[in-house]
Length: 234
Image (tube, rainbow, N blue to C red):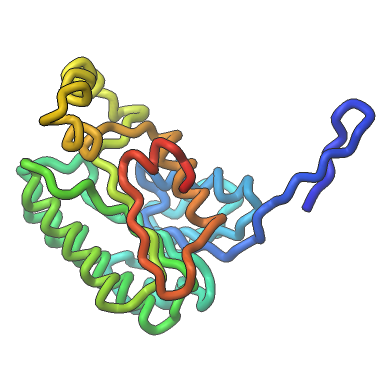
């Protein structure tokens, strides 16, 4: 709890409890925006990264050299009772990358869940994908498998289901916004348009930080869809 002076008055500001947070995939697109925000909230952040990527870990976080595809490596970096955020995934997913989804996305979530079974985190956070969807079937199948692994392991978890996260280098879908607006206005397509809607990187990071600050009850597994990501709280 901090006090901030505003004019001649002191305002009490309630800060979240500082937590130990491990981020896998912390040097990627979402991770490099998320880690600084977690640090600003006072959390102690560790980022699992390959040796070649360790210098890309955001300043203030602790770089832990390891392999996000290996359960032993993740387990060594994971702290019991902390928060684990799994962001590992194939960059710029497309139907042509089905093999990479199997070899990277699926292998990494299997390893992370196995590690969590040894050093049980208080809260496991997984960025999945919006479901169901009429495209990207191989990607959806792997992410659904990841969600099933978490459920079967009985982890206390928050699962995010964005469709596409807009941000630097990820803005091409903006040309589709007029079509989305039309689809959201039509009763027959409104639900699908909302479920498969875009979120900004700022919205995604805000929602992730909120999830860390407000973990679910023990044993609970909650799903955060596009509408909740946009709200940033629930």
